[in-house]
Structure formats: C-alpha cells, structure tokens
Length: 231
Length: 231
Image (cartoon, rainbow over all chains, first blue to last red):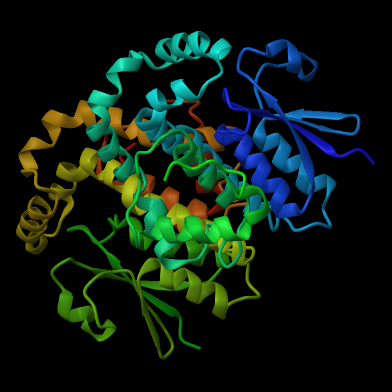
C-alpha cells in the first residue's frame, strides 16, 4: 500500500510549514497514527494541485483517492480508518466539532491573522511574495504596512475572541474532554500557525491556553517536533 | 415521587419567563420528557432561594436534591435520568458542548443583551426594576437610556458574532447533528430571551437561524407554546 501523500504549504525554507489548514490534517493523521509523506507546495503552484479540481491545500492523496478541504479530509480519514483512534467519537461529537471548525474559520483564525500577517511575508518563497501581498491586501482591505501599527488593538480583539476557549480549557484538559479530538486539532492549528509565523506571544505562562498547548504538543510529539516555532 | 420543581425568573406578569439560563433548563427537561412545576421568582427574592446556597436561578429541586447553575443541572439530569433521551451523547460530546456553553455565555448572550436590555425594564416586576437598572448599569458600564442610541452598532456586532452559528446551521439541522442536543438548548435560549423581551428582530425569513429556530420550536413544542414572543 502506498503511503498517504499530503500537499502542504511551505515557505522559502521548505521545512517551514505554516498553513493552519494543513496543520489540522497533519494533527489528524498523527492522532490516527497514519504515516504521511508531505509534499512542499507554494501558493503560486496552482498547476501542481490542479488534479484536485481546485487551488488550495491541504490536498490529500490516498491511493487512488484525492480529497481537498481540511474538514472533508477529517471526515474521510475517520470514515475510512474507522478502527484507528477516532477524531469524532460519534455523530453528535462530529456535529459539535463542525461548530468549533466554523468558529475557528470565522473568529479565531481572522483574529490571529491580523496579528501575524506581516510576519508571514518574509517567510514566503520569492515567487509567492507578490501574489500573497496583493491577494491579502485585496481580500482584507488593509495595506501590509498598516498591520503593525494596529497590533495593540488586534491583540486586544484576539483576547476577547479567546475568552470562551480559555474558559473551557480552564475546566477540562481538552476541547474533546479527557482526550484530544479533532476540535483540539482545529483550534491548535491556529496557534501553531501563529508560533511559526510570528514572534508575537498570544499568552503568558500559566494561561489555560498555554497549558493546553503543551498537552497537545506532547500528545502529538512525533509531528510537532518538526514545527519551527518562534516562541 | 414528587414532581421536579424549578425556580424560574418571571416578570411583572408571572407568565413572562425570560431568563436564558432558566430556558436552558426548561428545554433540557422537555428534551428528557421530565415534567416540571415552575415557581415564578423575581430578582429581589434572594431569600426564597437562599436554601440553594446562592442567589441566582435556575434552581432545581428534585426530591431531596437542590442544584443551581444551568450547566450543573444539565449534567445532573443526564446522569440521574440516563435512560431518558440524552442531552450529551457521550463524554466527548459533553466536553464539546461545554465550549458552546462558554461561547454562549461570553459572546452570544452579551451580544444579544446589549440589543435587548432596555426592553427588559418594562417587563419587570415593580420590586425588581430599581435593582435591575442599578446592577446592570454598574456591571456593564452603560446607562440604560444609552442602549437604544447604539442599537445599530450593537446589531452589527451581533451579526458578526452569529457568523459561526449561521455557517454551521446552514449545513446541519442542529448543533447536535440530526437531532437536538443540549448545545442547541443553550444557543436557542439566547434567542428565546430576545424574542420574549424585545421586538427587535435578529434575523430575516430564510436565515439558517430562523429555520433552525422553527425546528427547535417544533421539537420542544410542549414547553415552547408557553413562551410569550414579541416577534
């Protein structure tokens, strides 16, 4: 059987893998104990993943199957490898995880992104830089050099957004309860992204988020060891 | 066996029951098919529930047991009446519901509250009004007459907060998946509160939230029929 292959966003240095969506998949694969061969991919290499019918990573290739979109990949992995440790304990847990996934996409990731966006630019491959700056300035309506001036207010906004996550993780070890679940992978991927791309710290020692992050790191040490954190 | 008793916040008109926290419990009881006798209670009747060791409703009395705090009550009901329809399908689902509960407490309820707060005042029992105004002005730092002027910006903020809920409910019938779960009760209670207290609409026809709300209403019709909605 061929090893699962994952097209994974990379920086100029191909060991810098910073996409939060790809990290969801990498954590999910580690959770299930599935080995994976990652293929470094850059934003402008749309032709390389054209076989997937769209232009974004993660793209997972498993034998003859091609799956894109991190949520579709998580469902595919849990359905296909049902005997390996589950990402979703049952249907209700999967439905509730969909809320965590949508909250991360619409609240947590945007809050983190506005803090770290300018710090991503120097990490990019030369051929990606102009594309990245132009597409992000257009999408988010803010010039790349305006982000750092607003960082204090962005940090305050992030702190407000993080309130429900902090509260729940002060009372339980993981979003999934006593064990990590895909909801934890999704939320953690935002912080991995942040720690790889930017030196700006999002928590202090003793923060429930810091303690949870350390637990998650230990529980996924094989894959986490390769992360290139700045803090 | 004695019927379960619930101390439930009431307005001047004792049929107006508007506490979002009490509604979580009422929906949970309806979900489990447990009959309940509600006792109308006003904010200033702290002495009436002093036996619970604290001063907030819901307070549930089940035989010799007294439980306060809506989350503790939900856990108690699901553990004690484990053979009746479950609020939490398993431990992971309960842990993920805790996130929905904390998100509702820290994001959804505050977003709704700043829209509806001044409309609550005329519904209150005379003896509660001065207490309510003084305690809320102190807690939230805004004079009661300043809320309506800011309503447009509060509505815009609420729309942003509701984004993840809208997204997920556009794809699945309930937060819990194919069937309502306690996560649905928690989120719905914020909107019941809004619809009872204020004429300000939070959605238009065809909104995924509107469709989900109607589904939830039908699924809990016995208890919902008594709600006194303004829209």
